[in-house]
Image (cartoon, rainbow, N blue to C red; front, side, top):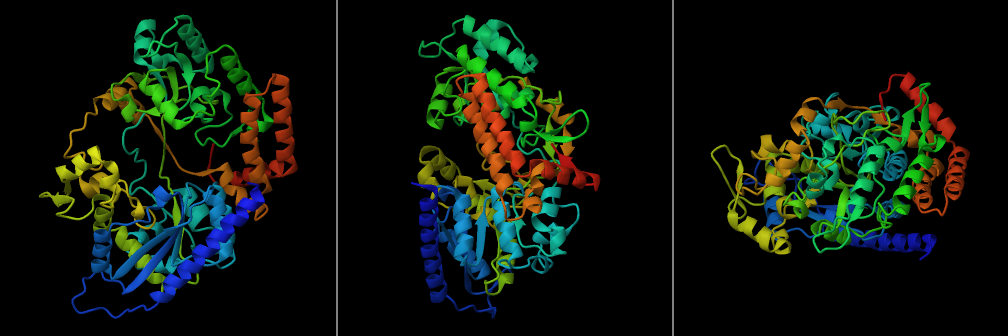
Length: 566
């Protein structure tokens, strides 16, 4: 289907969804704010609050458990309804939804950071008066009032998403998944390159001493020359894709990617000037490296295209000597057949652990057409409270868990057994612990699981899961030492300033996306000369769409005192 036709179809679907929402609102338009005598202190109003979620069906989790909904109604007076629009591209769906105009009582969307493409759409809508100013609504809340404290939010969330200078104290977008405490690394996790343990033992190497692309290449050659086979006796593939399938991630060749920890392909050169990778020779260096690996049979030619199911099947069968990205909690590696490798140094020579001060994920807004928007904010605040979070994370007391002497939820064994034996049936119980994510949209923030629930992960205080493989991987990686020496950073990434620079134009954003696509084309080019032509054309496209002016703009921001993360 052509792009324009697809957008038209999405627009029509969204407009039909909007009409359905209007009809629903008309049927339940009465809002009763008179509190009943026997209502709990948490009661807000007798009304329906409907959210339109521009996320995948699983993330939206619009099919809520009836008993969960009944509990919400009893405690708040709110009938909570969620709807989503199934579309191939959530960003295109959001664009069409904003154009359609009717966004229900609140709208939710993906928004990892201000550099995501959704941000331009949302800022445009906010600047055109489509959303309600949330600042005065947050002032009277318990949890969301923390967002008004200067040091609570990370810099990108505070300055680029929620409280932009041009809004003069107003706020139209809420960023979610904010940790309560800064520098919280969360669950101890080792991601990145992994290598088969039996190969490490056979070669007698220290996998943590492989720290640059040259050393990785030498290791790959050594592995190939030994003619290792997988669990089925088939010749092993030396370098396989990520555990989630084909993807261009930096772990395999960090020192050949012009970036630091941001992954945005911007860094400073020796003269202190910010450059995009297209202005350096790192793109073609990486192409040369990838083509060498492929031509010598060291990397699967499907490295960037393999489906997730086949990638995980390859891990289970030991078909890859090196997996280019996985982590220590993957069930496919419970036997610790793969152990951490590297990490490969970044282009600036570092490979230490870096922890963001805080980060966010996803967001929501209240359209200016919403009647009594304060009810939505109050409801969101209840969902983010101790009671609301416990409902969202653990379900219903007595049905799904009991409380211990400290008031922490103890998950029932029968629920854990069902989750193990029939996860789809368990999911119908309707909360995050069993895979239903409806609370993500309004209540998933101010996160501190151990402080709130007495455990970092759902059910871990009951089920002594066999985490020996995950724990051993941490030890092999010297995780505790690396964590102790980790850098905690805060600041903006370069692409955080894209919308401020280009407004509604979007051409430079498109050019950056094209560069990433051009890199994939260059990897598979027949010759290096052909690859260089592709990258040269991509650079010209970037410059024609304002790259140099944008970099000057960002450098001025830094000169004005803004901290830039590369």
